Image (tube, rainbow, N blue to C red; front, top):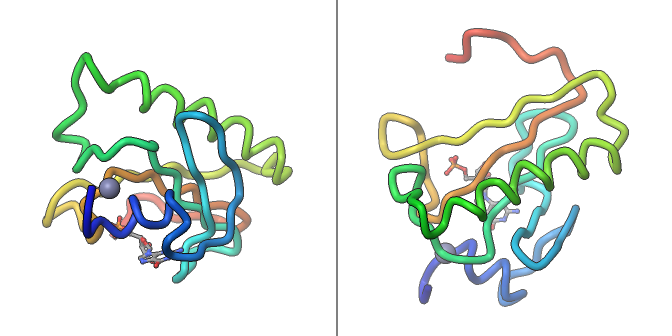
Amino acid sequence: MQNCLFCKIIKGEIPSTKVYEDEFVYAFLDIEPQAPFHAVIVPKIHIKSADEINTENSMYIAKIFEAVAKIAKQENLENGYRVVNNCGADGGQTVGHIHFHLLARRNLQWPPG
Ligand code: 5GP
Ligand code: ZN
C-alpha cells in the first residue's frame, strides 16, 4: 500500500536492519528498542490491524508465529521473550500495518502499563 511505512520497509524503499525474511514475513530491528532485543515482525501483505484478520489472510499470522520460533532459535532467546501486538488507538498502535513486537533479553514486567 502506498504511503505505508512498513510496506516501504518491506520493499526496501526505507532501510531497515533485517533479522529474518521468508516468502510471507519480514522482521527487522525496531528503531526505538524497548528491550535489548526488539524486533518488529510484519506480514508481506498490507493488513491494517488485528481487527482485519480474517479467513483469507490469517495464514500470514500463523507464518508470523512460525517466524517467531525461528528468530528465537536464531538469536538464542532461550531465556524467553514476549510477543506483543498493539491494535488501534487505545492499544497504542502507531503504524497502520499489522506488526508483532518480539521483545527479549530483559526481565519483562507483567502486567504491562
Ligand atoms: P506500534 O507502536 O505501532 O505498536 O509499533 C510501531 C513500532 O515501529 C515502534 O516500536 C517504532 O519504534 C517502530 N518504528 C517506527 N518507525 C520505524 C522505522 O522507520 N524503522 C524501524 N526500524 N522501526 C520503526
Ligand atoms: Zn503496509
